[in-house]
Length: 135
Image (cartoon, rainbow, N blue to C red; front, top):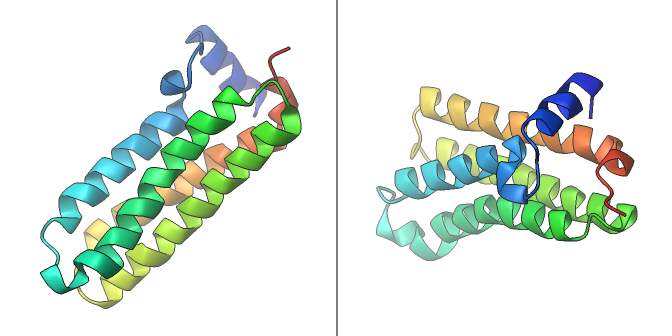
């Protein structure tokens, strides 16, 4: 994490995963996807809808797990990597939904941007995992 971003999180006194900007962004993304996917065809309920809801929800859950494992740098980084993988999977399902014309272009672009932003935040945390380790 860059010094400025780390200082910003320190000023905010990050004492729980819910305080992390990346967790809050992941939660917002999952809720937006849940809301939008309610209007998708019922035929997609056990396919695309289920998959995108699961992957988007897994981003935040893996961040929460990483936070609990921050005592061990390798475990912390591993769970953040899992969160980033779920973010990439969510982007795939967003592209699929767009290709099926379940998402309009502006909505797809907005959600894709959210995923990329979350991925960038996760990447910074992974690259600087040692600064998050709690002894």
